[in-house]
Length: 332
Ligand SMILES: Nc1ncnc2c1ncn2[C@@H]1O[C@H](COP(=O)(O)OP(=O)(O)O)[C@@H](O)[C@H]1O
Ligand SMILES: [Mg+2]
Image (cartoon, rainbow, N blue to C red; front, side):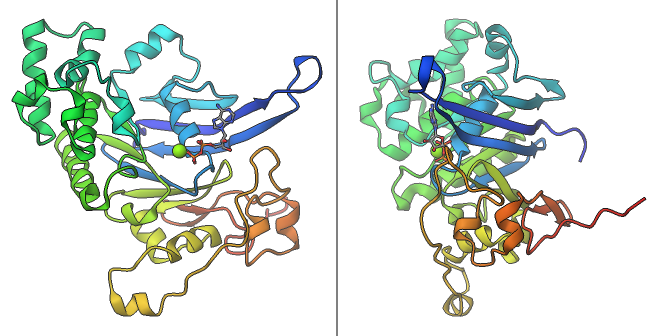
């Protein structure tokens, strides 16, 4: 791959736990604990994992809404994780986010036209008339009508509100959209409409997506690549087709076992892997492999050392002592 649009290296976001002596933290919530992730131009990467594994924190750090503890975030080859507020503001033209809940994302006092025009006004783009034209164009792009601009958000359904939020995110022609569970709050019946809209927009404008989801079933047809996160770490990443057909990490395998297969015959013979116990607290992660407390394959080494991500195929990596043992170092 040529230089990726976004390149994250060894990123950590640790939150202090208050309540220690003399105002010192009594511990740290290691929400993101050493993540590497790349997103190419026009590529869509899904970030999946159970609730609480650190997905939103990673997204917030990329957007500059959350200060990283350490590590680097490069956008178009430039380090952005230590940007000043002013440079970050300029960067917000390139990087936008769509959240799960379209209701709280829209100011109920503004018309939707005003909401969509807000980023244009903040960045001083165009005259009032040009902004009105752009709002009409954006409404058309997301499948709504220009006349809708004068209405308040309450006039719209959940799915329509998410279209409005997407229109606003596109207003400044960003290169990368972080989509944090963009369809999770919507009725199942309209999820695919919004996913198709996002796919259309991606093709049309060559957008890159980081698509965050706890639900793997929506990812298969959506993302070029998938990165599976567990307790602050990426445990597997690769082309969506490869990972779905042959998951290497036992956590990926367990997540996928819950996803219905399109082929009913294959579905009947599928074995559902139910993980024991809950996600451990990121304030007190297990020693060794973070998945060790729930892993059906765990061996002695897994309790001792954290497995590195190891190449298991073309552009495909997994972190598992059992399934992806690190090659032995060649002496001398
Ligand atoms: N501002 C914060 N302060 C303290 N802990 C936080 C904060 N934000 C998130 N966390 C914790 O970090 C972990 C990861 O959260 P999050 O990134 O929201 O996970 P996900 O999006 O995968 O559900 C959770 O244990 C969560 O409670
Ligand atoms: Mg989240």
